[in-house]
Image (tube, rainbow, N blue to C red):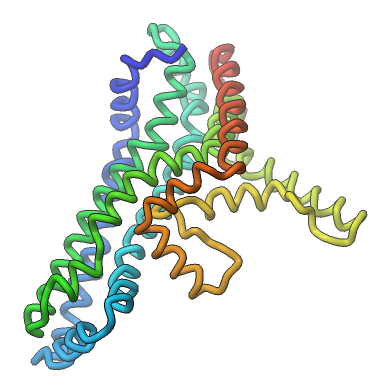
Length: 315
């Protein structure tokens, strides 16, 4: 039974123990991005001291159609998000595969089990941390960097004497993007639940190197699937587990992933822009059968992780 009243303090505990990954890492990413922005500004001043080129470029940008300005302005905004989500997915992978393993390794599980906290509540707190709270923190930092980027562009727009709203802030569409970011986070957690469940299950039973087991098992199964499929039908397996594993990461809902498809790169980028600013497209994922099959698989894996932790004492 999950004890809801205990979840806030348990989530806070996760942040205490992983503050570098959950708090400092996005701030460091933002600082590096800010440094690159400042270096770009100094470079622009160096090669265009009179700002004639940058001003003419802003005027030319302002003369584009509304659709063109939307696309051109939103690509760098999404690029900033991708930087954060890419790092975040790596952080969450190592966090989850170590979440239950580390407490067995250092024997702190003996202390935590002495507290009146159920195994299901403990695992639920780790799931909520990875699926909801950490993405919100990363997205808040990314939103601040997006604001800074638009303020910088606004400075060039003022120097070029072009209207700010129709040239910069309107095409950027920040209210739609930020609203969709908040909606996409819980939808993404449901979409990626089978992977989270698998990582926590591996973390609960792995005797050594949980990160390697978490990747090697689906990778080897996918390899053997392709081998036997090639032997029987001279083609790759239709439902390769490793490819399903990778696609679950890549084909999520923006702004949590790149929404990679089989289309050309340009089409993929344009589809990603559309999805990033469309709440209806994000919510449409809830109507897909593969979404709920994955949720069912994730719940089974989480239940298995809870049962294994209930019997665990140490590594």
